[in-house]
Length: 151
Image 1 (cartoon, rainbow, N blue to C red):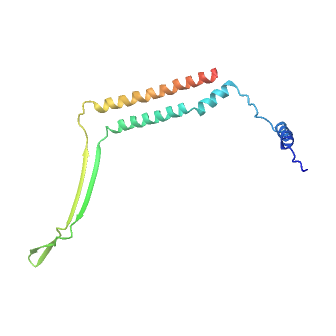
Image 2: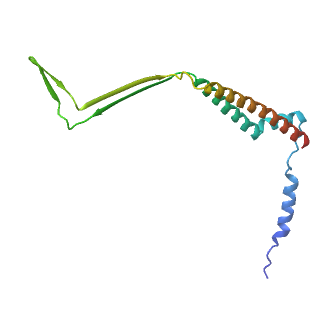
Image 3: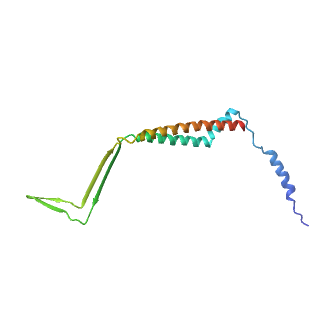
């Protein structure tokens, strides 16, 4: 009779031997200051708050730029191929006018004279929004520090 070897008798000692030879995770001890610094660097909330500050700063700069005059330049060309050119006789010469070409250009500078102090209030609002965003990041830093200490 042919006996099959029992695999559990072979596998169990191998697993025990492997588990004794491998090391478990090493425990890394850090100080409270290091934990707080690492928590502040890795915080997604603070990264979100920094992006809110960047957006508020962009809105503030945009409100400051709204006070500057606006300058626009437009131009265009149209060619109509079905119209034949016109000849205007002028003594021994004849001028040829092309009515099939249409050129257009336009330049404009706009400056509001009085808008009811709208630009001033928009700029103040953007500045207050920027200050509020800076205060939010300080509040979130304190909350994260407190959560790390409690953990």
